[in-house]
Image (cartoon, rainbow, N blue to C red; front, side):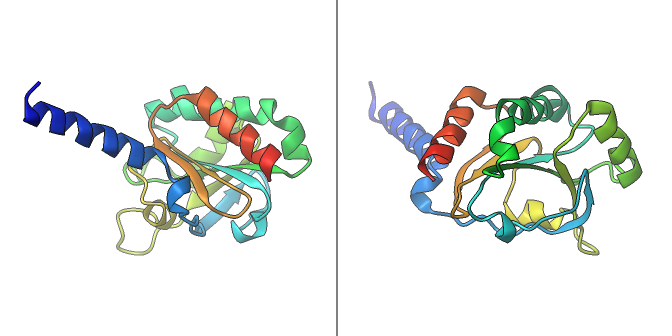
Length: 181
């Protein structure tokens, strides 16, 4: 194997490892900025300290959201029903509109949430005037939608993934955090 190929492989592996180990960096999750809450009264991330928090960034017209992250949040809502009822776990979806603003209006989102049977807390990410990307999306440095972030009881981001990912592995992380916290 030539040196360039070996270097490329080492670089790729190191990138994959560094991008998948957020816990080692101890990145504190930033507070979200929500303009409106759906499915309940709002909350702040600060108020959720002591709980494991799963945050889904989505758009109602996002194909990956509709096929992967929205069904996954609903599934985890059932899987972790006891932990949610005991207030050890909170699932929050944040509607982060960065395209199709005229279509993805709050009224349409409310209908969408009812239609999809989403029962957990849903917030509409706030837009600063003149900004293309909503505030929470910027704070979390998301790459788009869907993106899922798992935050531990101390407010540290333990996982942040864009697109599809190994849901079983993420579920195991949630279970680990629930039992170790």
